[in-house]
Figure 1 (cartoon, rainbow, N blue to C red):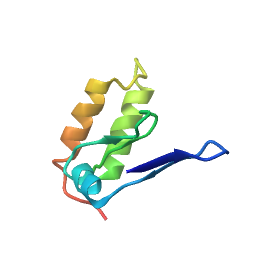
Figure 2: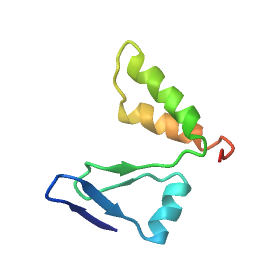
Figure 3: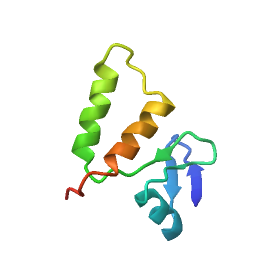
Length: 81
């Protein structure tokens, strides 16, 4: 993994094939400073709807446990292209 921040504060993360395979298998990858996290869901529209429910809900907070739950549930969905 190559990770750096540009002078205009863009975070750039370049993944190697092994990490990309891990992401697709359901293992999220975080940047070394933990400011960027990359995860995979085969149906991004489903994930978007679930995240909107969380952020528009009463608590409006995405806890690590809730994120793990959503990612695990999302991996069971068929891939949408």
